[in-house]
Image (cartoon, rainbow, N blue to C red):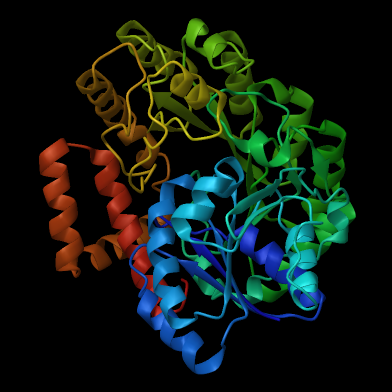
Length: 492
């Protein structure tokens, strides 16, 4: 079959879309023809339609959809259906998994994938090549005339080593090598993301990862991961790797084994994990193997709030983890959320005091967003605090300054005020820490691209004058730089 897979974006985050690249690789392995599209906010979707019409008439078109870009996906689906009326349309990802019926109806799809998609999509393509009976396939929802069929038993891939490496070659890879990437402690020139595991053991009420993975942890072998890394270094001349796992250090012995293999490559790398999953011994080995940054989800300095969101951590554990990280010579990235359910102004003030104690190298504050499928959102819906259709528009998590909905104990204006105050408070430390000679050259280049783009300059300046958010203004500069470089089709 001829298959087109489309990933929708809401902002310029330069990382490989693992969903469609893994699916594409599996389908290629089974002999299907595959095209991949990673659609950014300002990409010309008409150009994609034209390209497909001229060169590749698809049998199946699939979307990878998040709640934050659901409405853009709906619009693009409607456009594609006009041009390819005989194609089969489907969607997968977090939003279709937690809201399969809504996704089917509002996007006008033939079926929805629930959970992991590799096994499901291969079976669907096999069945559609012979008949149209999808009823025997796990992890799928569809309508047969007016009758709804849902099999929500997720068809997981138990052996991740059995999967081919992501089909990055089906996308313009240079687009994902444009700095700055996820590693903020040092603006590396050519960084690629790698995924070594699936799942997270935590049960945080604000996260919907368990909707896909059901808290099941599966991990690739060190040998399999190293083969992929060596391939990427050889083909793309990388100087850095970012491990995109939700909890990279969940198995310390596995990490130690990987560090032994990574060290000879002399790559710089970063990862994300929980404050409960680091030790002095492990951090020392990671630093020696090239680790320069670890991202920690702190969320809040309030014990009460941490308990209510089932984070499974405490301010004391956070302080210990960041102190150990600093002592090892690895930079720490701390992310917080403002406006968490029931959060008070005193809790928000506690974040300010706590930051002065833990002193992370880079800090980011998100506005809390209750995603469908999370425990917090479902409880709020049952209690009448949220309507079923509260996610009424696309939402850029990185750039928004107004909460989509407010479930805190304070007025929305208070949440916005502390969000701005905290982001501006960490601005200098966030960026002064990366002012090395090489990074200054990159910053100057990004600033030049910004100054010669009147529309971007006007938009960002107007936003800054309106809300005084310095962090957002800086993000606009680098986002504009990445967009220019992507259009040029090259990286530094």
